[in-house]
Structure formats: structure tokens, C-alpha cells
Image 1 (cartoon, helix red, strand yellow):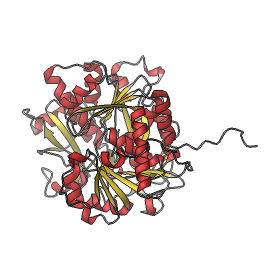
Image 2 (cartoon, helix red, strand yellow):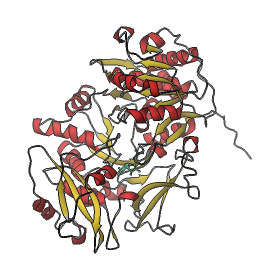
Image 3 (cartoon, protein in one colour):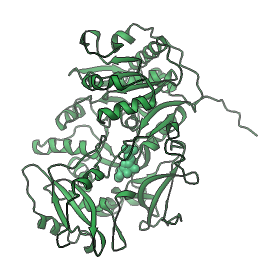
Image 4 (cartoon, rainbow, N blue to C red):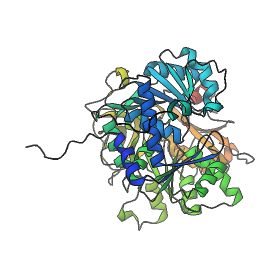
Length: 542
Ligand code: AMP
């Protein structure tokens, strides 16, 4: 017997319709690349999203056509999010931090028809447009008057001139909820990037899940500042969840330095912020010397790479801000787990709570996880046994765009490429990327653990642990360190610092000091590049 409830497709347009109807006067604030602060609200975003949809119709773009952006977090980008997907086209947010050749490669692979870009990226577009074979229209996200006359870019219009003249009414497309809505390329640290193609259904289900109390706990009472870029896995789904719950959004634009982010947090009464550890490091680095405090910030979600314990402590103990450690990936829309304590953990002493907070967290409803050994056998959930982390769920990838790389699934599960433990309470902890695991004398060493200890030293700004060949132990860990400006620490002092903090055999054999650790386009350490830098390195005594 079938249920007798209404069949309403889960479409992204329903989010903006809801936000306008029920939260129309809730503010959307943006620091613009023009330098000023711009204010609109959900009703304004909805009206202009409809104008974007009309403007796209005017160019006779078919359903499913890819519309690309090279843009910071801001209101125009948000209008494009809803205007593009709502009208049945596919939003392709390109990461501007990629190499220009990679930007062109991605645009060609996605067969983008339109590219909308912030004026910051005009030089980038000038560099790549000749290589972009499928793009028919370029849209500069500015007023007509701000567009230089001679850019050399063909079919270029200003956004305001293009969409500003359109009707503000639009009948959102009635589309199957399984239709593609947006596309994101993985960072492609090895080989060419591959793309995850999200659907309206997967996006809406992810938005519901992200807003849950034990996830981001988003509501109409929140003022939300996503520092995580809208070109990085749709800013972790925050624009969609905020429309769903009617939260205020505050966009930082291009200014992600500690001072600018702090000023915006304070001026706009931000209660919730989200970003990768490096941006929070810049924020705390600005606040500490000046003795600044947060007026309204209650919680922050930190993910994308492991959150160092020193950061959790600083936020919680010095500033009274709850840190939510999160894990996910492009192939998962991206949220997989988030770390909040259970009731029974509330009475634990702080150090035991910290042990839990450092984990990447519990599976969000909708995400199923398991860990398997080399033999494919499922490992116990005891917090000790580790294995390859596999996931499945309605917002987890089934296949890459254009079938790149063949079938990625193993018996219906997606192998994440991460190695993890899961404890009896369901908390998952990443120990490594599978390709970064260090195997010493047959035992595995977690590079993340080794990095976290170094990061707790007051003179260490960044630490990366890699394995190097060893004649007896096969591999031994060394730690590559970038020192904080003006602070000193010697090799021996740092090795000493490890004593008592980890098993003796896990203490790195050596410390290498560098001025910088290579970072990828999404701010993650590029260990492949780091290993290339260390190609001539030899362990002392070998
Ligand atoms: P991306 O698809 O670029 O978002 O990268 C996803 C990968 O980032 C994951 O597979 C993890 O290796 C890593 N990652 C994401 N969040 C975390 C976290 N909280 N701790 C450790 N690694 C993480």
C-alpha cells in the first residue's frame, strides 16, 4: 500500500520562496569587493534571483546548462545560487585559487556556457577566456559604470545591466527533484579534478540535516558568517540551510584577514561562523595581542582539515565560544560528521571532554559509516581499531560527472580515502588520509596526532608530519615546522616537547624548519608537494 501524502519535489527554488515569504525582512549583509558594506534581505535576494532566472532565459540557455561563477561570498553570488538552480540550470562554482590552466580545464570539462565573475578576478578571466571553448557569455559582477571599456573579453556584460532590466516575477521551474542543481570539482591534488554533481533532492536533504541541533543548530535567531567560500562545496551548504531556517547571512567578500572578519562579526551580531582552521588562526592572531573579545559569537564550526586542540582550547576557554569540529568532503555535499557531546559526557572532566571534541564527530542522520581493514573486513567500533572509512547516504556521490574514474563505489559504499577509528559511542576520528599514513616497524603512526602536538607549542605556526624511508623501521616520522613570526624553538626543544605526550616510538626522529608549507587551493596542506621539497632529505644517522 502506498502512502497518501502529496508529492512535492524537493526543489531549491522552494528554499528561496520560503525565505521570502516567512523571513523577507531578515538581513543579508555583504562586504563588497567595491569596499563598502551592502545591505539587503531575503525578499531582495528572492526578487533579484528571479531577475537572474529571466536573464538566463533571455539567453536561451537550456535546462541543465552549466553556469559558472568565480566569486567571493556576497549577495550577488547568493542571487546566482538561487537564480541558476531554481530555473533548472546547474551552478558551477569554480575555485579561483586554482592554477589558471586548471580553471580553464574545469570550465571546458563542465562545458560551462556562462561565467559570472567578481572584478577581483578580471585579470584571471582575461588570462583564461581564450582557452574556455564553451563559454558564450561573460558577466562581470558590478555596475555598468564599473566595467572597463577594453577588457579583451568577448560578450562581456555587467551583472547589474544584464539582470537589472529583467522582470522581477518568475515561475520557478517544476523539475524532478533528482535533476542536477550544482557541480563542484574536487581539488585534484593527484591527476585532473573530478566533479560531484549534486541534485535538488540531495541539496535539500543536506540542508535539513545541516540545520539540526546536533549539527550546525541553525535558526531564525542566528546571524551566520560563512568564512568558508561559496566556491568550496557550496560553503558547506550554509546558504541553503540559512534560507530554510530564515537566518541572517553575513558575507565577508574578499577580506578574510583577522581584522576584517573580527569587525564584521562584531558589527553584525554574528552568532555562528564557519571556516577552515587557517582562517581562525588569523582571527585569533589578530584578537589576542589587542585583547579583543567577542560580543555575540556563540559557536563556530571548524572543518576541512583537522582542528588543532590549541584552537579548540583558545576558543572555548579564552573566548567562551563553542567549537564544533566537522568532517566531510566534496563527494558528500560535504557534511558527514560533526562533533557535539552527548548528555552522558557533560559531567566528564575537561581533559576527557577534550579527547572527544578532538574527534571529527558522530554521523549525521542520513550518513552511514563503517571502517574496514586491508582484507575488507569491517573493524570494531572500539575507538582503537582503524581502517578505511566508507560512507553511504542520499547526499553521498554515486558516480563522478561524466563517469570519470569508473565506478567509485565498493558494494554500494563510497571509500573516502580517509583512515579512521570509530568508538563505541559512534564518534569517528580521522587518523590520516590513506596515502599519508606512516608505517613504522609494522605499526601505524597518525600524522595528525603528531602535528597536533607540535601545534600546541607556542612558537609553532604550522606543522606537517610526513614519513621518510628508514633502513630498519621502513618509515619514520619527521615533523616539518613553520615558526610563528618573531618566536624561536630549536629542533631539540621541540623533540623534547613530545616527551610524555605520545608513545616514545611515535616521537618524530627529526624536525625540519621551513618558511612555508605548500597549501592547496582549499587551504589544505599539500603533502605530495612537501615530499617533493624533501626529496634530498636524509634522516640523521641513516
Ligand atoms: P575536500 O573534498 O576538498 O573538502 O576534502 C575532503 C578531505 O578533507 C577529507 O576526505 C579529509 O581527508 C579532509 N578533512 C575534512 N575535514 C576534516 C577534519 N575535520 N579533520 C581531518 N581531515 C578533514
